[in-house]
Length: 77
Image (cartoon, rainbow, N blue to C red; front, side, top):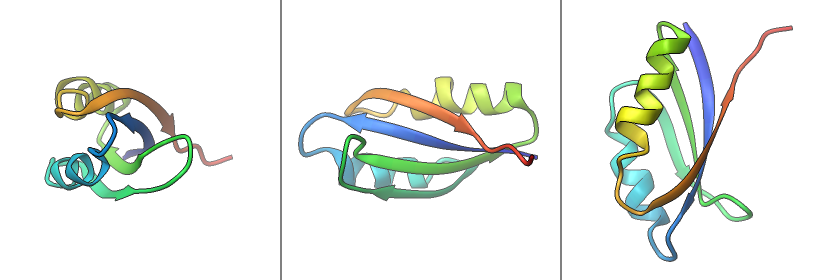
């Protein structure tokens, strides 16, 4: 299992809608709107890195109102 945090910037006033929409995507564990340089932080999981990439590119980045994403895979050192 691969897990990651996805940091998302949205259009002004869209954070709550984006978080709510993303929270319904399979593979998304949690989606919260936050303050600071990012508007939404998502915790996601997938079976492989490739599946995680597909989740981000094909599902998350297609949500209306998103302007930029940064995916941070979780590592266990």
